[in-house]
Image 1 (tube, rainbow over the protein chains, first blue to last red):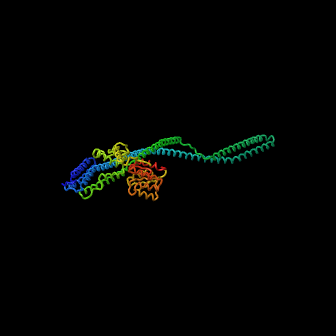
Image 2 (cartoon, rainbow over the protein chains, first blue to last red):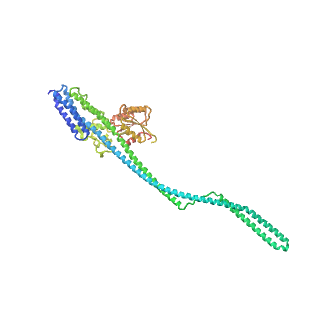
Image 3 (cartoon, rainbow over the protein chains, first blue to last red):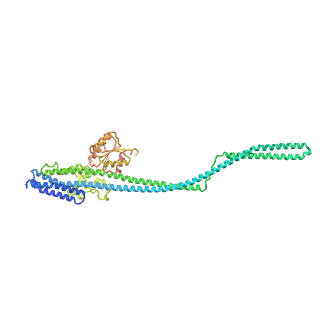
Length: 444
Length: 124
């Protein structure tokens, strides 16, 4: 074996390679697909490095291999941290998705319940409306029957009234005919009076022989006076009757509103029933309107909240884009490292540690910084992968709430106070990072 | 709302556009959308006069900060809200200096967003 420095580092590199595979195995111990992804990545990189290292150990390394070996060693050591960071970022993304989907599912279930409730309310309203309209229709039918009876009765009364007026007109005409007879009667009485006067004169001229004739003349005179008086009274009566008939005939036509005695109370009762129905219908409709408004308001609120929770997709997109960039950078870095080990290329322009600093520079979300900080802190403090602190998000369905997504995005610190994320915040502050937990909504 | 207000919504995420547009339209707003700052400026230079602009910050072509600065030159009094995942304090400050009216961190619930809009839009 070549005694050059690369040779000294060879066993260590081999050991690190093995540790890398073990690390990946440890991280992948049966939790979920992110760990499986870590395992796969660890194995691939381990396999990629291992044969190359063995070859280098067998045939020795170039003189610049001292730096190269140290560089590889540092990067491989840092790789553990890099995977930890990526694992935290993946877990954050998963947590965000899970919390958002759970919250949205809960919202959708509430919308379904709200819609179902509104549907039930509408069914009740329709049933009530059917009942009311059925009752109203029946009452209207009764009203129609009663009014038809009234109309028929009025028609009969009108017909009878017309007959009465016609009879009055005929009587009036007959009375008027009688008036034309009256002057003749008076004339006859007058002539009888003149005749009685002449008979009395003739009886006086006849002397004692005319005494009997004189008595007859006096009687005739008395009768003619009575006839004249009777004619005058008849004339007055006819005249009075004619004027009364004329007045009656000139009166405006009137209809006797004499409905059948049973009809009007029946109609009145129906009207009272209608009034009572309307009296209950108005408050019912007011209550229905209020309940519908409340139900619609709740459904609208849930829909708006669900729409807000849809924004997790944009957040996750950015998280995944950053992960994609980080993995791409990592792949490129280790390709360069591989070329270095084979002596085909100079060392990568940056150490893995610097590459990870660049990751941090590219973060836009506080949750990314917090995830990075969690991984780094866990690694630096107990040397373990932060498997137990993978997700800042609630993982159980019952832990999901409408605010869960916001809570995840703020990594618990902004939304839920300074509880579990307090250390993360402290780590950020110590690092002098300008990403701070600011207000989620701020008007300037 | 006495008069329909127009909101110009700018985001490169189709999901965000759908989410916020639907939220606003459900509440009676008219919504125009643009997928980046450049597209938004094209609309504004074309004579569009929205009552409110809501913009993401991290976008391709022209980012939200540049859009805020450019839009403010055209629309002196129109409220502009940043709706973003960005947590960097310096960007928040830059937005404020460029003339943004407010800063909202995603995700923002529909009711909260509507409340903010009512606060910044006169006559709503």
